[in-house]
Length: 208
Image (cartoon, rainbow, N blue to C red; front, top):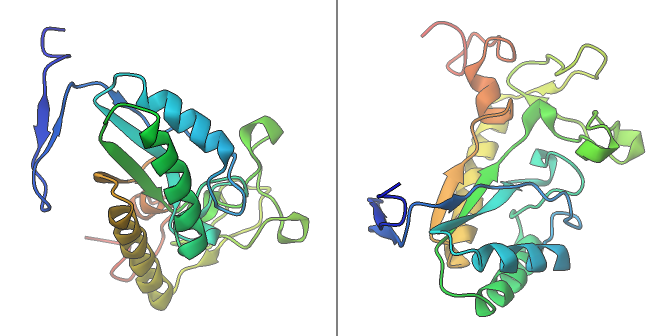
């Protein structure tokens, strides 16, 4: 506990980032965005977190593309509209709180995208019911009763890489101090790491 309230410095390519203490607010999905755009809900939530006294606040899983959202209500940062909305709410929240470094978790849900919010069951939403076709390393459904995702082509993978770069650049333009890649919880990057969801035999799967 003696170190909890002492500063901690990250070494990064853009330069060191020093946190005033070692308490970090983890990313928490709010399922309250409008077409990927931050809303007044985010303004209130972020303002509260930025006033918490933590050393770093992490914005929830933020999709790098519309089809990468976990749910229709998930936050995104992939175009000018989502960037403008996020910028507006974040800048307002930062004006209402002491200075605190901000991190953003950027994500693609892969075959776990197009899902209902947890309080609505969290199951896959069909395209004809407000969802969209999901993508994954292999055409294997997340649950047996769900429709299979589309297997990503090499061109698709290149586009998703570019999407992550685009979102990271937009985060930097917003003055966000750190970026976290979401590679857990069975989302796209994690799907590439597991034989349960990745049965490819090219450079993105199979034997090392």
